[in-house]
Image (cartoon, rainbow, N blue to C red; front, side, top):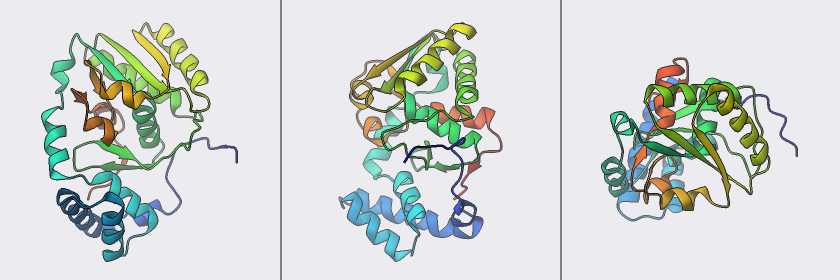
Amino acid sequence: MPDHRAHRGPHPEDARLFGREFWPRLRAAIDDLSRLLSGGYAPVSAGTLVGDRYQLFARQRTAVARSACADSALRRRGDHQAAAEALRGHPLWLDGYNVLTTIEAAMAGGVILPARDGCYRDMASMHGSYRAVSETVPALELIGQTVERLEIAECCWYLDRPVSNSGRLKRIMDDLAVRRGWRWQVELVASPDRVLAAADQRIATADSAILDRCRSWFNLAREVIVHHVPGAFVVEW
């Protein structure tokens, strides 16, 4: 079915599912799931166990899974996280869809999850196809402003070639970079995860699989949202 969304905003039930009355239950579920993952439990079975225990709805279970992590992962990610000051004068490689869709969602009022590792994650999913929304160019503008403020030397964006409309998004990004005079390079690759996980450069992503393998990462989506999207629907567990 074609994707006709104009925004990457909230699900109709999100105001209720992530309302204040659920915060203690969700926080406890994240803690329990993190404890099970730290003990070596498989993510799927652990997630089912925790979701059943706290009688969570499907979207709440997804949110808990995206927010929890094992203690070993938490330490590893913390040890490899770069401070904003360390980016000055250096390049940054971006997990394109991961960073962009989180900021699009925040600008559109979608749920933003403050995960245990400090990352901001969204609830959106693309299912192999990307559609530009009303927030796409404004989100790119905010990223560009943040990159300038942090004095990052240049950005190399990596987009998934197999995802539909990646070429169209690349043209939007290339044109915007030319107009703004930004030093951006946009690459279409088969697997950004593989490229970024093995990169010698600092990267920007909230993808857990990449964070657990990369050399150094920066929390760019959170940086943009904190400074530029004050009305974002950030769940306060």
